[in-house]
Amino acid sequence: EVQLVESGGGLVQPGGSLRLSCAVSGFTFSDHHMDWVRQAPGKGLECVARSKNRGSSYTAEYAASVEGRFTISRDDSKNSLYLQMNSLKTEDTAVYYCARDSMKYSFDYWGQGALVTVSS
Amino acid sequence: DIQLTQSPSFLSASVGDRVTITCRASQGISSYLAWYQQKPGKVPKLLIYVASTLQSGVPSRFSGSGSGTEFTLTISSLQPEDFATYYCQQLNSYPVTFGGGTKVEIK
Image 1: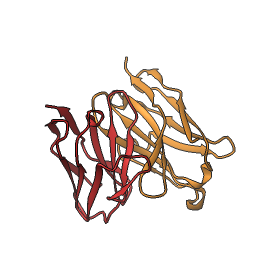
Image 2: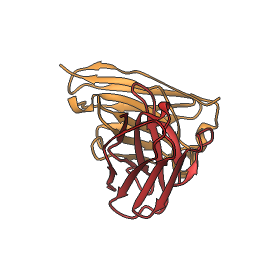
Image 3: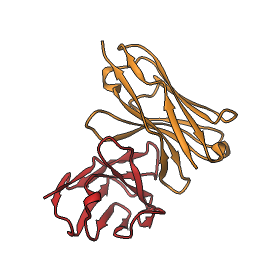
Image 4: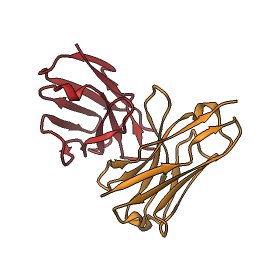
């Protein structure tokens, strides 16, 4: 059974940092691109970062809104995906989901989400 | 970035109705479009990928069509469990982007 479990969310002050983790199981992690998708309260979905698979040399890609502030990484030996978030802004407040790219042009499995609140 | 515009943004319908949601892309995306359903407080659920392929386990009343810049999601006979928000997503190029969503509510 495929599972994705996020952790590391919480309350942080503007300008602060936070690191999210996503532990995965039930599939060959290195075969899949993995993404972080966020959803601000009452708003739609936004992809913020992607870690491509081993075949694509683990290339990272970012949305313009987080480029230079967020860093995505993965540890295939631990079946884990990470999102290091620095210089956080109030507009980064959202539920952050990790999602598996099915490799068939879709995201077929999602974690339950981690709430990040940026507030003073 | 490729913009996706969904219409309508809100839809009121009755059980048994046929419902169609449109998603327009700001440039051609071939068939690299997916549709998701999200209920309040829940995780998005994949319904359709590459524009028209039904994800395993999704009821056949859901269907998708289109290519290039215009796509549709159709629910042939709306059921009580279908009241939710629906999002389209393009995976033709990064950043992957989503439409603004269509909220389907009970009339």
